[in-house]
Length: 564
Image (tube, rainbow, N blue to C red):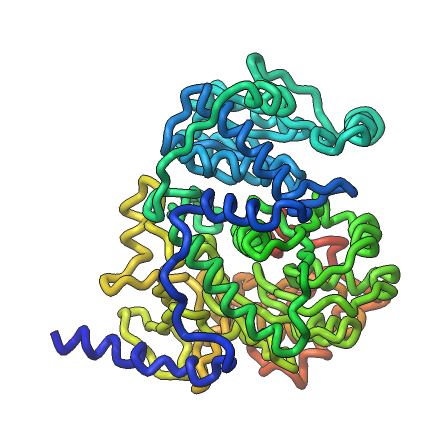
């Protein structure tokens, strides 16, 4: 008994609470809504006339979103899809996404988010593993589904076209997408139903409200598969509802520096099928009555910047590679940043060089946070009233506990590196149909083992040093790629950088960096010399390879494993 008491001793101390902003309570209140569908319905009633989601110049008001979702939910019910049925969404940020999302949740079904850029192999695994019975897919990706659908349990296929919800302009958009840009490879899915037909058929059907509670499953959020086979994190309605309340409570600190805007506009450049945008943009944005500006292809930086110029953006969630690309665009530098009061960085480490340039240009500090698919996602974040970039992932958000543990599962002291372990209402119920994998990551006292290595300082701020498996072992010394990348990113001739470990006869492994040049004349020697006074000898890169681009996930995270 005394042993378990001992374990909770450091947790009881919670050093981070002393660093909290005055306006933020340490715990969230009871979860206010029975389900995510109920929360969305409440927002639609409260903000009915406001724009909820805007895409390519066309807005969907909260009232229109509710109406469209009712028709789609009625259609799903008419096809015999019962509470608990899994329904996949394989679409980028288009207006059909929030409509399908809300419809599936209101029908009591479980959303299976699918990355539209998946290969047939990845898609087949996810559809089979989740047991999805229906899928909403954008026609641009239908050819991928065509190759594998016969091997899955999918019975209902709804195919959307880019311009479906854009009114008259939609016909032009579809023509350009299909004929001019040739973005829709030929496909054939017998028995599929067009999205517009679902809306019109659903109009004549009656939607029956489903009794959905906080303990029902809302999402199967598949993790990137960086650890082999992709697994579905089972997220309950209460996990995401809690995380929305936690994040919203934290938002209070942003209003101490800038007045709370009457209506907020969020930009949504990260895909809604990714847990970060899903919780922060779709759910928290709706709850606040905000307008979400959907960006279908954030990689097209000139088009993205043009779109940004038409709106007054207040909240900008993004990640390091995106911020970096924008800062290197001349038109972005001319935008008006006065309405901006919050920039939120997540998904990967934000580099100090990027954060400094962002603050200089926009006047706003990037508030770096941290989260995972398994934690719905937000776990820690920096204060939104901070005056400078901290270089840490911040403090545990309300109702969240973090302990740092060693290989034997023992808590380590403040300042010591170990595995970041998380406990809180946002932690998943487990991996879908994988009790073996769930057992590996959940501790007896209810903590989720993140697989990330880091430490907590005496003020409660957490610093990630790296993924366990990305660590480079040089003659027994741990070298963290993030640290090397941070240093090299400061070189004015470097656009992007990634560090990995490569085998070495003498020391087991040595660091190697892959660099995309900003200055075409940059040499290998210059890169290595630049590190000389900033990194100890064993941390310095021994090899430099120049590339025109680095492999990234669809969200923009650099894939170190592919470079290895």
